[in-house]
Figure: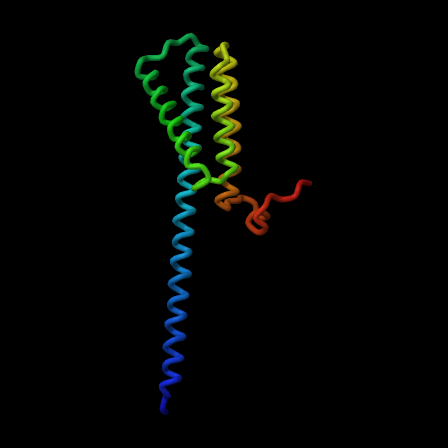
Length: 168
């Protein structure tokens, strides 16, 4: 059996093309997975920061309402949690929709505005309530936005149709 040079060149060219396409597809998938991981880390960091902010206010308020004076170590820990959480949220807000969705950026901006407004409240209890309400609302919104942005859904409907099920 004799193989012509033309047939051999066509076979070689098709094998090179198939290999090139396979490598490109693998690299694209790798990039997408890495990008998804970075987005996940950003959302996890945002939620952790919101938790820190919430915890610092709740624990301080609970101690105050029980008439207990916090220790200097506790005050330092709350201050550090608050500072770190605020700094992380500000960083993600400043980065904008580079990693997170525009809806999440808008939520973080509204959260900042709500906490600034709460800080002007003269009554401590009203300040804490406004602060907790803003934090809880932001956390709930970020969770929904993160699931949507990351394509994570717990329902079979969402996995198939990439949306929430219709209302009954």
